[in-house]
Length: 288
Ligand code: GLP
Image (tube, rainbow, N blue to C red; front, side, top):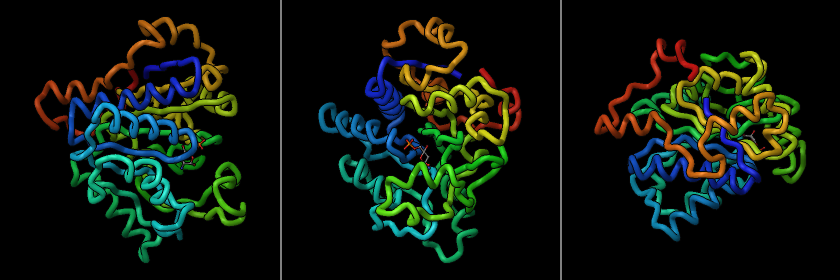
């Protein structure tokens, strides 16, 4: 796991956007896993800017979002479908037919979850998965006690999560009680992961996620098993890390150019999308 600490939230978001932009330039048909939440808004702003000002090309990119609320249609302003169109898809040259989110209004939710897994696999898997972190340490909507090998499924949202996301709804009680989320196991199969967290309120959970013991009570600790995970933080979110100094020292320049995720580079060197999704062996040997 690499930890990049930037002096403020904007620089941290820019670093995450740089990682995505470099991966996309190295591989124009990138399988890009996307996340929602307030932290991601500035990442999408940066990506839109890179498209408008530097011609960053999304035309061949395929995207897979982590999650969606059960019961919210794509045109509901509180849905993640809506968030993605408004903040990102409609502002860049992405082919909407190549953007995928689980359908929270599907009649058969279990079938929808299975199909979503198949869709990701049929499209060659996810090269780079962008992640935020919930106040309880969730990835996507993998609430405490989500198995590290869990797959896309319907989950019940915790009280903490519903309270955290309530400001994004007209009334707190309108926050749905359930969601579809990619599983922790699904996320760990992405060829590389980029987790972005900013702000003081994330400091405690970030420290538990990065330095704490592996536990399904904090699903983000599963990222410690991933062979190519980069965590990007601002100083506030990094504030509780015990090894803060060490992370700053092992990187040549904390404010310097962000690293291209090694998995994407390796894939590019292999001349195509030939790397298999993380095998059981690399999963277990995983931590780097
Ligand atoms: C929601 C999303 C998560 C995201 C989290 C963080 O719960 N399902 O994927 O990580 O929000 O949100 P914020 O960035 O607003 O703190």
